[in-house]
View 1 (tube, rainbow, N blue to C red):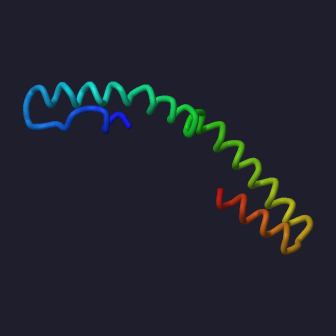
View 2: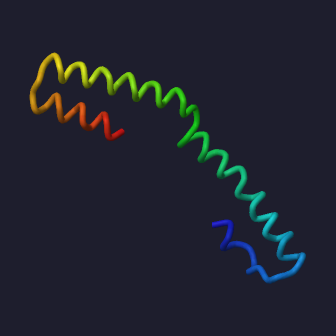
View 3: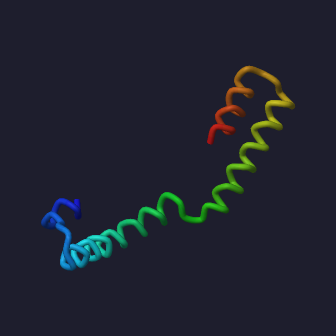
Length: 77
């Protein structure tokens, strides 16, 4: 969106300035995306590992096609 709103860039100092301004406009959107999609990745990884271990233990305690399918889905995450 931001890229379409500004004029095209050509090789000059002004072009570098315009490119710099475009990047500054993107900065806040990229930060918001980072917070929502990748924020607190260590906690999300730890939680996914705990879920995976629980699903694997459940598959070992109660072996069935369904429990192994659920464990495989947890592994894919």
